[in-house]
Image (tube, rainbow, N blue to C red; front, side, top):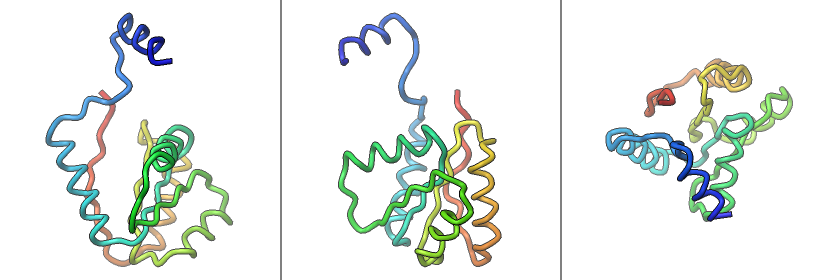
Length: 130
C-alpha cells in the first residue's frame, strides 16, 4: 500500500493533508490545551469522513482524561440521549464540515446553541480548504 501511495503522489500534485501554516497549528494546539484543561468531555459532530477520520485517530491512540464522543448521526433520539449523557457545562464541541454547509452538522450546531444558553467559548476559526 505504501509504495502505491508513494507512486500516486509522485505522479499527482496532491496532498493527504491540508496546508496548515504555523499560526493555524499554534491556534489548534492552544485550543486543544484549553479543552484538556477546562472540559471533561469533547463531542465531535461530523458526517462521513468528518467523523470517520476522528474515529480512526481515536482508535490508534490512547486518550487520557478527556471523554471523546463521536456524534455522526442526526437522529433526534440519539442526539438527545448523547446530550443528556454529559454535563454540558463540562463539554466542549467540535463541529466538523469540510464545506461548512453540511446540513446535519449545522442542525446539531443549532440544537447545541439552543440548549447551551450559558457562556460558550469559541477557540477556532473556520478554515476554508485551499
